[in-house]
Image (cartoon, rainbow, N blue to C red; front, top):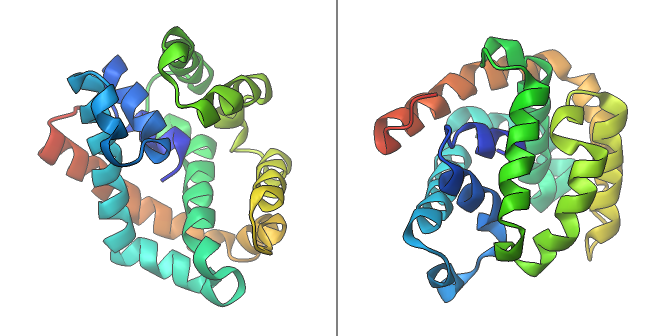
Length: 195
């Protein structure tokens, strides 16, 4: 799961949303620098990632990319799944996607001083380019993959990931549709978050 799905799976709790958003940039004991309610969001993020990485449907999606993208295949599937969530948003929420995302950006901006340094650099660009809404569009998704490819130390090939999404679009779409209700159920049951 990528940014949009993680925020969506946090329900309407601001500290869970914020903690879930920053979790990948909070390592080791740095988690203790945040109030307990934000720490819960970080733990939620890690639970979601753990559930996702072990799930047979996600593994199936990732395996299709493994030969070409190796260790980056999971990150690419995370982005694919956010694409499907954004593209089919009305199936998962009664709230308009633009309004949902605007509210999420407001929460993140209100807590800007708490963001890890890397995210202080990313957030303004994320908002100005409206990443979370634009995951639904192939050309915007392509831009994100190209930026990610430039930041990797090793040759990732991620700039080609949209081509692979289009090639097997129906398969990835079906896998997302099977997987996403299960991650929602997991969050509802383990974290008592009503989505």
